[in-house]
Length: 336
Ligand SMILES: NC(=O)c1ccc[n+]([C@@H]2O[C@H](COP(=O)([O-])OP(=O)(O)OC[C@H]3O[C@@H](n4cnc5c(N)ncnc54)[C@H](OP(=O)(O)O)[C@@H]3O)[C@@H](O)[C@H]2O)c1
Image (cartoon, rainbow, N blue to C red):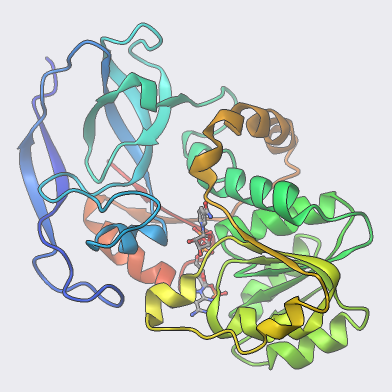
């Protein structure tokens, strides 16, 4: 029997404000939404895992971003992983494990050209973290922009999170001396376990003072996931020719408003390069990055902690976890 209906969360209205909690009515839960018939070039996927991402909150707004706003009246945009149940695309067959933009729904009809196959020998959800958005982002940001040389000092912010923890491990593997910044003693302990020489608990310690002590010879690379005051506190500690990887600005999604960089002048005399990037721009390199990550994942050399929420109805709360720092690792929703 072909699947005819799905449970889903539809983006029903734009939030009243561009940051902060969502009011009622922004997302609408539907118990029995019709699944469209599969057309040529499309596949039907039974979604098993959803990726919860900091950017999701921004996609709900009617604001120019690196992607257009998520469309109203459709399943909320999200990466997911699942199994093909019907295919009219030559590259896919029923039973294939795939990942892509599947949306907050249990069954998704999508263009096959937008999907990636999940390699054998890894759990399906790895396509949403270490082999997917988090791993690709950490790898591209660190190796293309940060380019740490052995012995250089790298600071990673939100270091216990999905992207951050992978950036820590990749930088350690590259021979760098890594210092993390994270929000609790438990998160800092994890970051040290992953190979960082130390980790600053920014809720308990003054970041600038701690970094000055831990990196007396200054910092060569900052891999920044937070932005705002955290990034500003790091700028006076940069070495000559340092690289700042602008990966994320999670503080902005929660707090909003302008976040002035008071210490920007340190960039000039130190000839610092500060560069933002969006991993989606590098889709032509995903195979190359995956080829480097996959053996390390299979060998157990790269870890990504998972924070799993159960069932589609948990998805909206998952976004709140990311913005309050109460997630421990990659935030995922496991569907029934
Ligand atoms: N450039 C790209 O292409 C790209 C792609 C994917 C993700 N990203 C970015 O990468 C970053 C990490 O994403 P992720 O999915 O791996 O999430 P994550 O790090 O697993 O979760 C977000 C973490 O950010 C920290 N945080 C939240 N608010 C904060 C604040 N105001 N100040 C300091 N820390 C705060 C929290 O940890 P603590 O407990 O340590 O505070 C929270 O657990 C995000 O900024 C995301 O937008 C960028």
